[in-house]
Length: 85
Image (cartoon, rainbow, N blue to C red; front, side, top):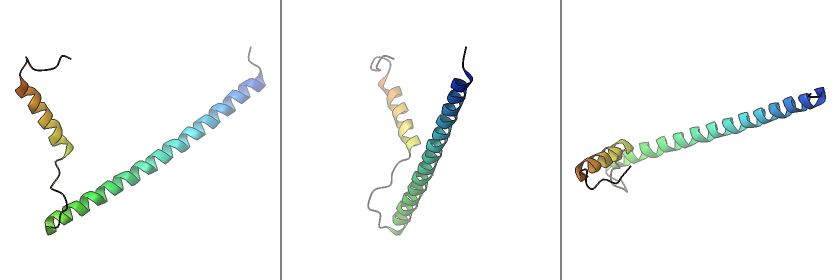
């Protein structure tokens, strides 16, 4: 049988763990939002620079384009050259 004191300690430690996890989740959300904002700022600056003709780098392809290119390459390899699995 479980003693009342032990059950209370288990509940308290579970509540403390939940509170700590909530803090960590919130911190990760804030960090993620900051990263998204920074990425958007970078993309806006890059697009503005391209329009003004002062771009430092060539226009970048989106991730979806990269995935499409990989799919096309796999199709063009044919069944004999594909890796198993």
